Image (cartoon, rainbow, N blue to C red; front, side, top):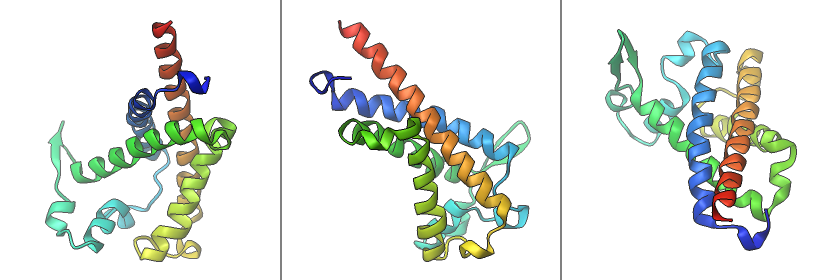
Amino acid sequence: MKKSNFDIKDAIIAGSIAGVVSGFVKLGWENLFPPRTPERDATNPPQQFLQQLGVPSKFTHATYTYSGHKLPWVSFLLHFGFSTSFGAFYTVAGHYLPILKLGQGTFFGASVWAAAHLIALPEFGTVPAVKDQPLEEHLSELFGHVSWMWVTHVVAEELLAENNQRQK
């Protein structure tokens, strides 16, 4: 895409939509390859992080019921907020720094995983130290983030290309 055709508003919208779609992909991935043991998932990292900020567990563990399943709406809100924010960021920043799009976003996804799960979250005490996390957690999170950002890339690029075609 040429810089003269770049519209930041369109990129934010495309990236946000891509973030929602890829957020569903990441949730699906985690159902097939759960990153945490049931014990560690009793309070998942988004819930733990909010509690570290002083949000009461009554709120962080709030659920809604669908088809007999209790689902953590607060965790979902953070999950999709993270995914849409990163989708919008990636789509805009990738235009100005094309290196971010290396590997169709897969390297960026791996970098987000490393920054969050190997550095920031252990440093904040939200998750255990890297050496204390099981290999299954590292693999699930790494490949989940790679898949998540690849889907973000593909969806955002397709939306932007379709938008460009409509404008011609």
